[in-house]
Length: 395
Picture 1: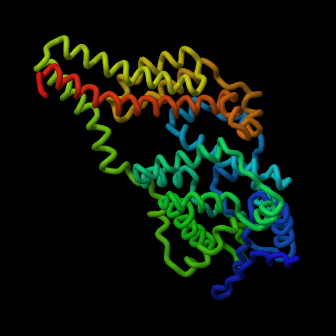
Picture 2 (picture 1 turned 60 degrees about the vertical axis):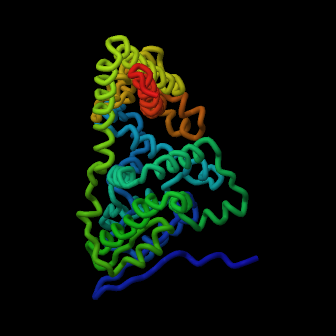
């Protein structure tokens, strides 16, 4: 039997200041004990946590789901961010079931121990919304589909964890390990969610007040933090949300421009009948597939109808999406109740739960409606070109 791995603790000194970097696994009971013992014995002036403000509030306020305002989430266009957060939480919770510890327990205990000691608490991670937005806008077109596939796979295929894997996960940061694995096929994900944050964490830890600073971070971040410790970091640049790519903006505006050009050509070369047929084809293609997407999410019949009606129009406007319309309709048709929000932590543990819980169902409605509308656009244009060729008498 091999000896257990040594605790992932690294000491660094800068002038008269001492930093203690403590790497943890977010689903490890051993990490919870190690954090508590280290804070009690070392008595730091400041405890830095690998959390942003929103994740810290979620961790400390266990009943926060009761206050979730899904309408506000939709208005702020954060449905995709919330859905990704829930998918990641689902993965961690399912792993944690085999480890008999609640995900993030070591961060919560670190905050509690710091308060008991009277030490300052510093949140040193980048805002999760900034990270996810930077990721999405930097992903290449092919990487986006690959990422969606990997996330869907994590949801539909429960992770198999045998006893040896459990012992290995107790010494690792399971979420960072999963992101690193996906990063092999989606390099941008690793660069934005791991490498960038390593530099951000290193700079924020160094800025923390006090002569004795303890940083509690995921074990997966330790190598990157140590590698970037002495490097200057442009925090303003790392926190900036990049604008949508030029190609994306041009592509979004090219859809209505191309459609109008095709319709104009249809009316010019084929007359009113050709133009009417082309409009009908566009409405049916985008509307029916958008409605089908809403139906896959088990949306309310009124929601499905709203998706069918909205898609032919919203697909022509880059700033409006059919999923936002159907999401609002679903939210008002079957608004989540308190008991639905209370059940959310358990419902996200299964695929059926994602479809059963009204809040996650709304997020799925937004996602699948938009996917259906996008598919309708891709199908419609070749068909419109075919109609134009036929009515124009071209071969």
